[in-house]
Length: 237
Ligand SMILES: [Zn+2]
Image (tube, rainbow, N blue to C red; front, side, top):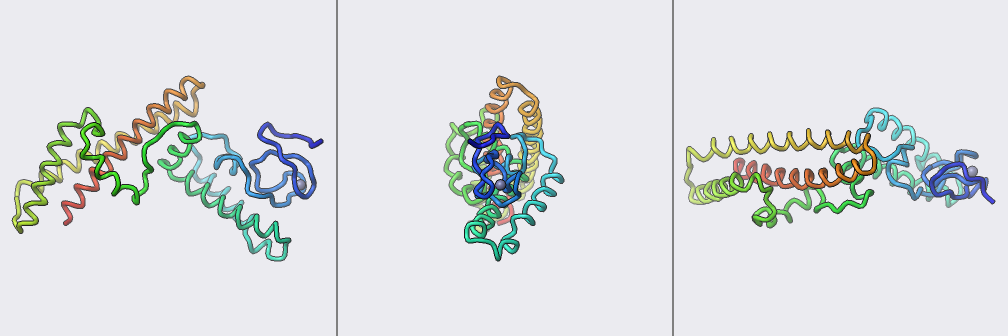
């Protein structure tokens, strides 16, 4: 029987056979490298899932662990250990990239908690969202009128450009709209941070509520970023 030292899923070290939780890159007993852990990205850094992170500490831990799992250090090790150092390095990079970015971290934690969230926030998927933006049911209710107005102006601007005309009034009006939507984005980010704190400090019920609010905020954020990108592209064309 293995000695279980932690609450998470225990696995036996391949080298010393002592059980340890499935979230560590190195055996806490014999210090040998382990296969990629099965826990979440937070546990790779020895963290509980949370949204407010000490980023300098995370970066420090990332560099420390990266040096420890670096494939160069396993060049003369056995085949398994060499493979694990590659796989652990890849996992560490993914985990760090995800957790250091506030939006990716929020999205990741919400997914961990089983929340249903919209398409991802990356630029590659943004083009696909173009259609959705024209769908009135996707427009945040409080922005319906403004978005309708903005889309008309964007259309006008594109038409004018196509005809080689310049509409002196349109440019400042679009620039003003861009500033307004940029401001709304800042507001969304502030609200997200408030919900981070609610989630980090709240009980189960408070967390569920915060998750729902954050899913809505991420949707709104995605919508607004696409809108701002559209205006910027049209203005810069
Ligand atoms: Zn061990």
